[in-house]
Length: 111
Length: 116
Image (cartoon, rainbow over all chains, first blue to last red; front, side, top):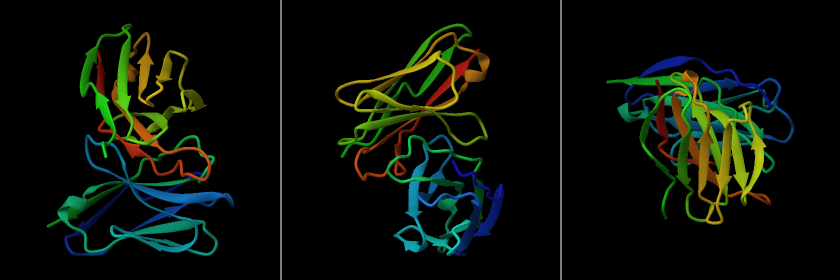
């Protein structure tokens, strides 16, 4: 399973765009990149998943360069309620038997 | 559509005891995964069940065992509890098989286990 590296913590202010970058130098050809969000005392919640280029949904955008060795989760106009831990995961799509979570990035949104 | 539920919410046990945690998967999901999350850490994969069969196991000792029932609900059993077993235990369900994505898993709120 490809190892991921992401910042331990980030601070932002309400209304700003936040970009969290994840490095995954050993990503395999059939690996997909998935991001989860976790609030205290709750289970993680799926945010977005992609393979290459750009993926956008109602919550976030995911940017993946051509070499796929990194990815950036972009949260537009964050609010206080976006304060959470964000996890970047890399795994095959249909044959994955487990999700490997790192320590994640603690995002704190300040007023 | 009912989400993933877990019981109990909190549990306190003493070292050496045994515990059973329960999980009801989201409607229509046939795959259940269990994770252990220690304070300040990301969730660690324990094992996964797909259609009542174990479908993968993480680096956990045999005293961690599981079961999945015909309705796809699941149990996690831990024998001979140790202090380090204190953690949040998360259950996640997904729709496995074919081209479905194992990566989009739906997590329950977890069971907070404290071992004294």
